[in-house]
Length: 261
Ligand code: GLN
Image (cartoon, rainbow, N blue to C red; front, top):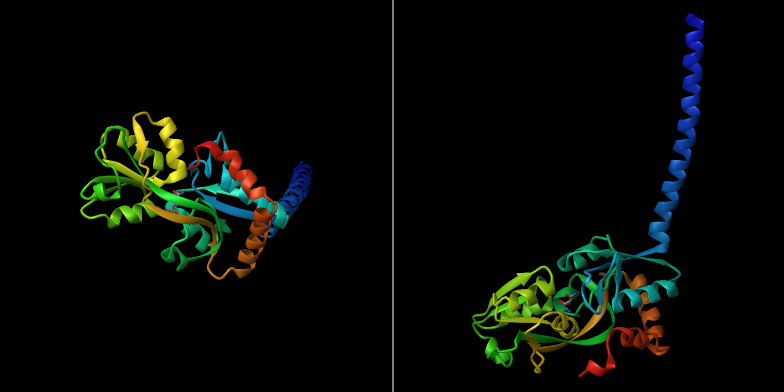
């Protein structure tokens, strides 16, 4: 009886060992495969999918100009693209901490940002525009003095609005939330990038975009400061996309030539 029990226990132990070894072995293998894949073959893009037509959600997918440009770059580099959607003001920290390989988010090139990241060649011209209610007396940048201005947190609009004399800046996590606050009369104006403004105005009744642009700027992708290898690779791919017309093709798909001014 005792022997039998001992035998049973040892059989069970051997069985468990075999199972766990197998499990352990395959587990290890999978992990190391994945690990290699992540560092070698996957290009991680940090973005904030609240910025149509550059990045927005279509169901679970992040789509838009930046997503397609990034995909085309990844294809050229023979890498798999992984898009991480996060708060706009987390994008540059994600790039500098190595959580993401690059940021693509309609990112305006600014001297301040250049202290933390390196920008690729630019791929789009952009503006900051002013959105107001249709019946607003605000007709241009000069009328913003002393007004309540809504912006998306951490954007160039946020910086410019902060420079306006006596203006009170209301910061929102999403650009569209600022537009909704404008609709509800909580703020007097929104300072935001021109292309998303055109998208938001289609969805927000009673709102218009002023003709006079507030500033002109340019977008680029951002990599960690000093990552010359990736910067060079992205620039080569980007310039190829510019030369072969693929960049224009992507932009045309999302920005209707008719409403470009
Ligand atoms: N172009 C603006 C900036 O870089 C806004 C970008 C965005 O909201 N995604 O600050």
